[in-house]
Length: 113
Image (cartoon, rainbow, N blue to C red):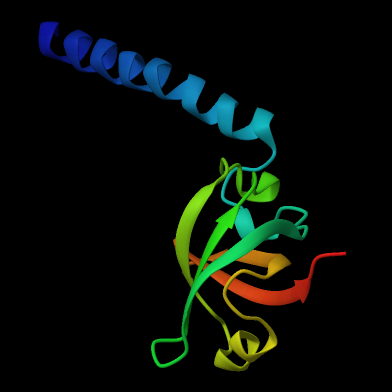
């Protein structure tokens, strides 16, 4: 009987500790959604380097709000290498970046206005 009571108490404690996690996921409404599904927007940046062979571009950018990323300089792969033909080092641009399976990928580039 004592073992049954201990087992019951253990099971109840396990459920109680998991309940806040479930409530948090439900309260945020974003649980399980990839960041790319958030409302994406163009970000301002300046082209620092282009590696057409590797399909990568280095951009000094401002905050990327839809990915909750602060401004910094970083290397991004281009979704399509043809995007890299639209710009050159030193250009002020606006660009779209998405989180594709944990990898930040540039999907659009246009000149800044």
